[in-house]
Length: 210
Image 1 (cartoon, one colour):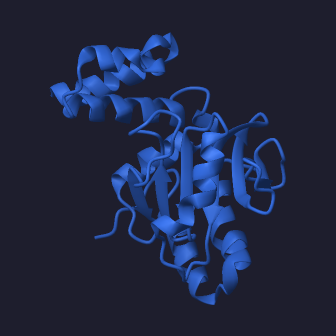
Image 2 (image 1 turned 45 degrees about the vertical axis):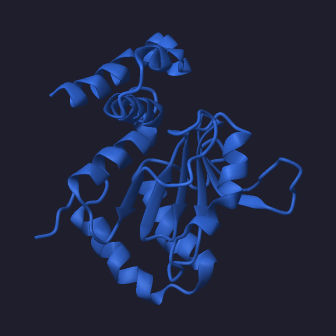
């Protein structure tokens, strides 16, 4: 029995994507008909530059490369998105632009997607350096309960409360403790010094201590 969410990956939305993707041709149609509907589903206005910027220069002296989307909150970049044709299987070689742009911004989340699969990246291994491996993979045609939590953290309306940055801190805390890192090493990380992240740190610790 398939799982459907109440907020984002609802039965109607998943069925909409299922009915569309076989008709889609090429990367641009993948963006327009598969990826952008999900952005709208999680609260972003495709036509508002304060919400979404498209074809953004990667920087680092490489003007010919561009990131497909940057999701913003009130104009501040929060999430980087690299898009591929839905027929293309996602792989490590597709992350070069994301990697370069991640290092030059304050964004803590990068997404590689072909409109059906979404791979989520952050900086778990080295702070401010995007990891080589995604910390989460979402398949929109085979949704599960945790997918809703991930999309809830990415959702525009949650960015001022328990948004993606706090979820990343929660997951980092959980991973560091499970990996048996020394307390001094944990406390040296910048987010442990930020009182705004106390609830996220506590949530990560609570998971490990259950």
